[in-house]
Length: 282
Image (tube, rainbow, N blue to C red; front, side, top):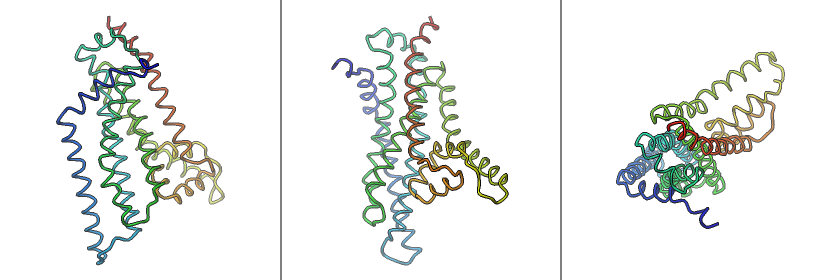
């Protein structure tokens, strides 16, 4: 049992990533940008309002901005960290050596994935002291804070799994990265556009009457990170989505199920295809 839990690939990747000076330079720049944004927001808000204190409503606005910054961090950095995990080994011609070891395909795939996930989690947790400054001014509950972190982790794991999947299926890192970023842009840009089109068509067809149920629109809203996080931070927005689609199914359940399924399927396919690709290369 202990040998199954042991993952030398993960241990090696974590050591290489966290021993690099570039990693800590990136963390430093990220924290510096977060501090500038937070203190700049507080200073600008108090200057415009002419007060020397920070209102709870303004604290909620700051928390919303920080949450979407963290979401943007997850969406745009994760593909760059995971899309070259396997294809990079193939381009350096070190993949055959890795596959001849006693490590299973699952250990290799999960080791590559978790090393990237752990670095991003380290980046997120490093910013928690700055992120948690909103509690000093009130208006934010710890439950909402924990929910935001939970769903950020779910999103991070799903996008990372897609990156490892494309890195396994595609020989070139550049193509793998384009495919991963394309998938991310589809979820973040194309899906809300389709959601708006379906809502407009549904409302136009009813001619001012009560709109009919639109399960497709509700599904699209529940899997779009921007719409979901906005509804998480502002529950009235989630109620508006339910009114427009006439579907009362909670958005967070659909979000968890969809991205959890993406994570499981991506890891499963990458595990199955890892050594198949190696046989083809021979």
